[in-house]
Image 1 (cartoon, rainbow, N blue to C red):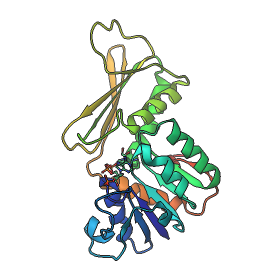
Image 2 (image 1 turned 45 degrees about the vertical axis):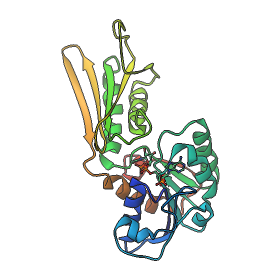
Image 3 (image 1 turned 90 degrees about the vertical axis):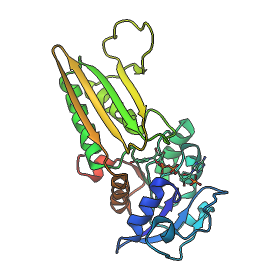
Image 4 (image 1 turned 180 degrees about the vertical axis):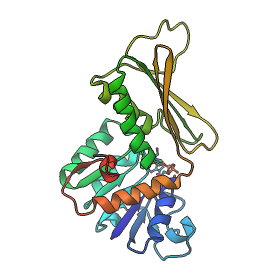
Length: 259
Ligand SMILES: NC(=O)c1ccc[n+]([C@@H]2O[C@H](COP(=O)([O-])OP(=O)(O)OC[C@H]3O[C@@H](n4cnc5c(N)ncnc54)[C@H](OP(=O)(O)O)[C@@H]3O)[C@@H](O)[C@H]2O)c1
């Protein structure tokens, strides 16, 4: 299977390159990054630490055409251009998409299979499932989502935290007001609100906790990503699963067998 990797120079992109170049059944079709990248022309194998492979990092997104699946971890503002450039199948983990990015996702999934996930870890897929179930059992309990990430993360709250908020709302069967942090004389907590809190600390890979507060008890459901590599492994697993499917929008929960 031929894999294209976009955002190849980034933290995630390099880990995806390493997974692809270390797999016997995968071929690195192309590795691309943004225009004017200082790493354009570098060798993909050397960049991800597996030794020279004679696949240069390119700035031209057209190079992604012809791959069986493209894996993208890049930048939300750049995403519409990436989605438009792919012609086969797209696995993307880019978070912080705005309305243009979401529109690009919809357009792309009308002409090819697309799997966008805010988190490619199996544990978080299970966490989403458990959170939704808990929220359905105690819809009246207060719910708060807390996430921690490394200091270089550019969007907040994390895409995973947003997905967990969706899971709470799905479980309750209704939408809620989202309260992003609190300050000052905010008054009593309104029933039904969902609190969301983003911590930025050193090199934390990713931690998420959903707490449900009832009368006399609090339930915490949480997940810690120990190594960033887990997301690359999940994205490659998703790529294998997605290749050759009909156009449409797919979910990582389907890949791990939760749906
Ligand atoms: N779904 C998941 O499981 C998961 C897990 C981790 C991260 N993520 C998400 O994946 C994305 C990438 O994360 P990362 O940690 O790898 O980030 P990163 O290290 O900053 O890498 C981002 C990549 O996109 C390029 N880029 C940066 N700014 C750009 C811009 N304005 N226009 C076009 N390209 C740009 C970078 O090129 P240069 O190297 O030239 O700057 C690099 O190739 C983020 O949205 C992050 O939240 C998702």
